[in-house]
Image (cartoon, rainbow, N blue to C red):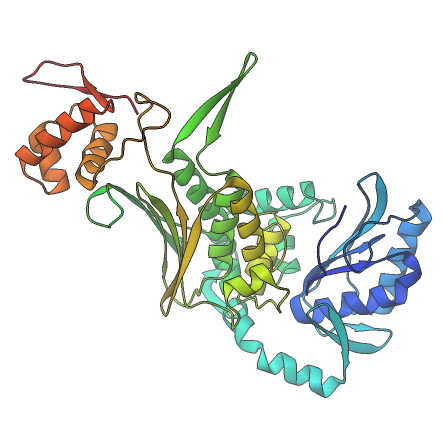
Length: 444
């Protein structure tokens, strides 16, 4: 089994015999990204070879980190079994840069750890202040203006995922531990993640065609990032197609898009947005596609395809927000969003695209064509734009009159009648009411 390539936040060591090199890698990753993962028992090319793991070997790793990484960090260290081989997995994070190993300073570049002198390290942090400035600035919200349920859910998920150590936490401990407060106020990152002021906006809508013309549903949610991720996921899952698969006596409901795909796209959208005002995230559900829009220009000098095909240096616009989403397992791997989305979409046979514009980044998931099962397996019945609009209205309100439908989709009554006749002939709808006061049953 192979774990893939080393990255800017992922390091492999063959055994704990490479302990010194491991400490250097941890300090380098902390200085560049503030969070990362290291495995003992894996070759540099990702091949799992395993190693002997005992309580003493876990303690040795813990002691080495405690004694040699300064300032001190408190990582999660555990035995990990893959392909029947035993590994040691170390997950670490820290806010108090710069970090040294054995009194020396390092920076992560691609999969290498490069030693730098204090002046070069200072220059690096000064050059990259813009990435963290907004997050660390003091917001107008007081530190008590928080969503306690969201914070509690965060630490429970993080502990359950093994990305935070077990312990007794309070909301204030979480805010302090991750630098989400500044004096009596929340930082901008703290307010965005867990505030109760509705600082972040999400607009979600359903459209009758692939253009933003006929709106069938529109919602505006104002909440924090942690809650909006759940709200966005639920909105999409509630409004996409599902199919039933019966295996033996069990019935399984399968969504049109795997939940993992939806979750990864949404998490990366919120992680890399620009939050310099009351900007709107957007979800648009069309008959032929679903789009997820993230406000703010694209965050990296590298194109998405470079991340997918290669092993280029990751650039993270909102390190604190990204870290919190990683800890709660909203993001599966730190800094590897495009590569993971590409892999998930290929596995599910989903076509996707993206649009990178000055004011925002849009990710597009393409939907399969609707077709009628009334025809043979080789004959697909497609719908034109008007038919899709009429069908979408009837799904929401089956007793809609021709005049109501015409008004909603901006067509004439005669055009609506032709669409109704066509949909009925194609097996999509059936009239179950009287001719004068019809109610339509949507079959597809």
